[in-house]
Length: 288
Ligand code: GLP
Image 1: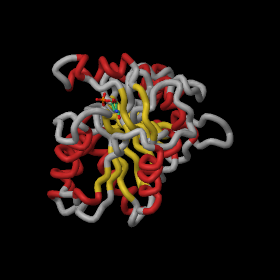
Image 2: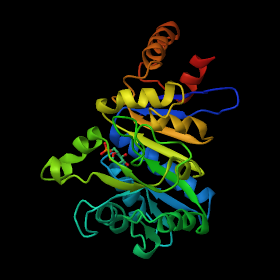
Image 3: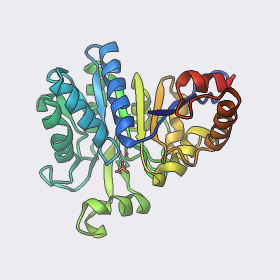
Image 4: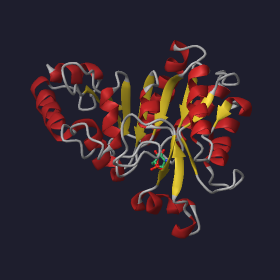
């Protein structure tokens, strides 16, 4: 069930992100899967931008169910956002392994069409990765998660918005957050290669998925604060077609949400609306 459907214009010239809030992570993933299929259909030949991390896992599950119902991803190109430096490709936590496990196999994608950034600091090789995205038709929709510090991909706070695929150092907070995937903190790589914010912003559409209260502050900053390199996800406010798909916990710290909720209650009690009615129409009416 959708709880909120709103738009956050950032400045007159900018469209601002669309925000959709669902009552469960499962409902958010189902909606996100529909959005991915719609974006792929709207841009034939363009690729799918793939994120790792826990946030998109339910989405990949939902897309696998679409495959079982007839969707065909076998000729789709895929480009992962990032890769650790220093892990062998066959390491279970290399993003190449994660993408093979969570995306390529369940979606039936062709491994030769799915590209993970090369774990290198060679500028020519990194530039070739960006060029390959362009040469294969660009990205129809880039899937993103968000770090607790507002990072997207592995673009940490302080990353210029013009960056292309590049080698970067991981912040202490990111390494601590990702230590859950490794035996110990010291096993977490210190560096990674990530698509740059400039690379990400070239995608036709961007879908940011966030669930859980621990993401609420980063989500609120990404949507509602001024645009700043201190929170890389605020760069998304510069893109014309961004959708944040959230569960209610991840939307919890949004400064608009308590106000919105209060209006919903007033509106319902005034018009005796069904208490469960939080349809887009209702919310659009509230916004007038
Ligand atoms: C990781 C990834 C990001 C991901 C983020 C959040 O470090 N590089 O692409 O979005 O951190 O991960 P999770 O969804 O597991 O919280």
